[in-house]
Length: 197
Image (cartoon, rainbow, N blue to C red; front, side):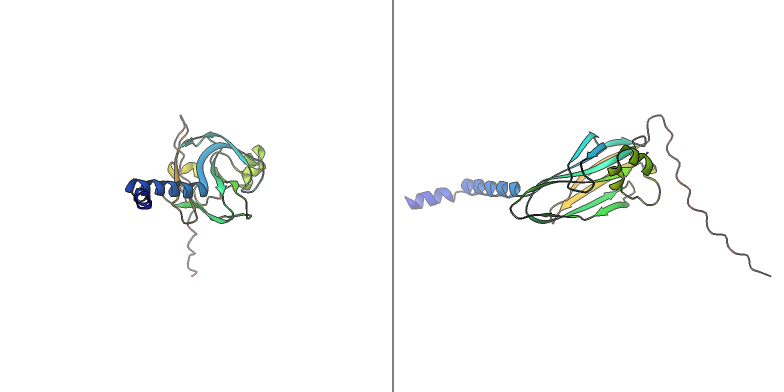
């Protein structure tokens, strides 16, 4: 009787079913992550972890949009420390944002977090501050040519610990009816001193 029961338990289908259950339990125990890009973000706090509401999310934006908020929503973050590896690449594959915040959850708890950054497009710091001071606090400092001149596909990539990163791609396009933004001219070279006679 026991031999027949053991044989049934070790049959290929039973083993496969057991693996599915174990994999499902492992998946349920891990943090769930979703990425979004939105033109409106409203936070109840100024640092990551604060609850965040978003509107007008998608994967196509124009140079007329004041900003694009890049949002990471983490659910079911387990106790201990979780490192979040964030990368944002412009259409030329230049890294414009790299950040590795660490989330610490107290023993016995699971947490929900929002981590976000603001990519200013048409708005400057003053315009962002007039809408909501928290937007300035989350501003991604992009060096070099302005964001509005970096037309094409952007790549927002986020990984948790050693897991496979998730990727969100979005496009920045010229506003309808507008001319393609002219590139910012490079700074003029310093004058060469003339030799004294």
